[in-house]
Amino acid sequence: MSEDKQQQKRKFLRVLSPDLYRYITDKFEELHNIHAYDIQADAIKEETGLHLRLQFGDQFAHQEERFFTFDAIEERSTELEEFVKSTADKCQEVMIADYFKMMKP
Image (tube, rainbow, N blue to C red; front, side, top):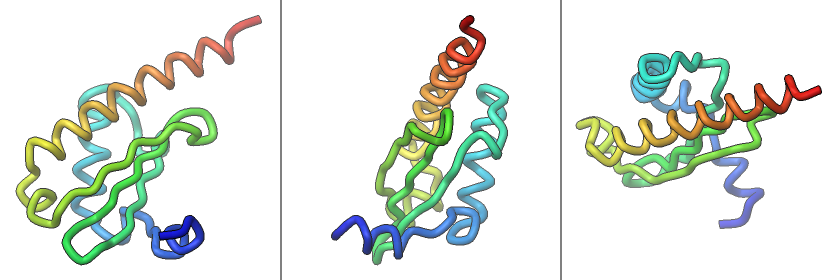
């Protein structure tokens, strides 16, 4: 699928799956006190699931992507939990690095 077609199909996760969006933002806040406005979450809805993309960092330059089936999302599978946790960890690292770059004289 071309990049243009992907962009047309990509929608805010908050619209496609409000429960999943709330789960992700709650986990980010619980794990590292990262707020919903520190990340951007969108997805492409496919026949069997969602292709998630989480963006973070200065100007949302960093991103993590992965596909999850609707069953995995509904059951909060271990793969989904690991993806959210590892992305939250990376987001924290990036935010700390961005902070120190900003504070550098």
